[in-house]
Length: 239
Image (cartoon, rainbow, N blue to C red; front, side, top):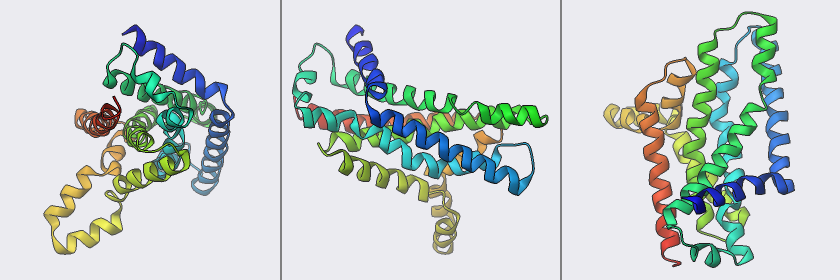
């Protein structure tokens, strides 16, 4: 357990010891502020519903960028073999790295606190959707980062890892895309409903309404667990 915690700390600190971590933070905050201000002037209402509505697409781009270095860098530097010889189980290393990426995402989301603060200064917004939106963002992060971690374990090239991770996330994003669901519905309404339930958007929307459903948590844990399991299998072949 101590070894897993050491890996988690090392990975989390690595985000703040390299320029890429700060680049991700700056770009995320700049685009967040732009999205918030643009929606505020368009709608003129004190809420973040539209802002959170864009996050599935937004995090689909940033999560692979956060996760792409997790294993690709280890391969590139030749430290993967050393890491796997430590007295720690492979799944513990995988989990520790994923949690470090999730913690980094949580830090980024915390840095967006001026957005809800501005809403409270301007009016009296409903806290439920705001809290639910942030919770939903972490749920999204759990899935997107797990897919990105798996993609990173497949290659030593971070750019390739980003593209593969983005592609995997895009699949889950498109499963909740209304035009695609309508097209599938023309052939089979039952299949359309099934595809929608596997999509990110279906589970994210309920959370942003301030409704925390245990099924959404189970969905995130199941999908994330599946990718982390694949991640572990890839690394086990290296041992």
